[in-house]
Image 1 (cartoon, rainbow, N blue to C red):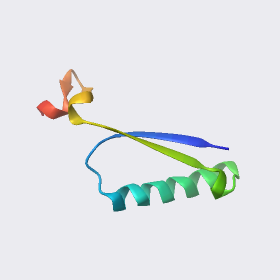
Image 2 (cartoon, helix red, strand yellow):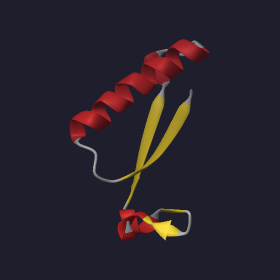
Image 3 (tube, rainbow, N blue to C red):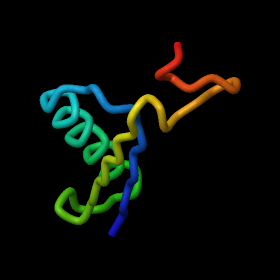
Length: 61
């Protein structure tokens, strides 16, 4: 039973997240030969002030 966690900054639409889940599920199913009903996806959204690169928070960009 594959479990995939996707961490991303908040702000995507429900349609984008739905498409992401569908496509990742298909890719995992095909790659590891797992039935799609056994593939679990967890989306963890972070606010822009909880993520930084290069010492700068995204909320400060």
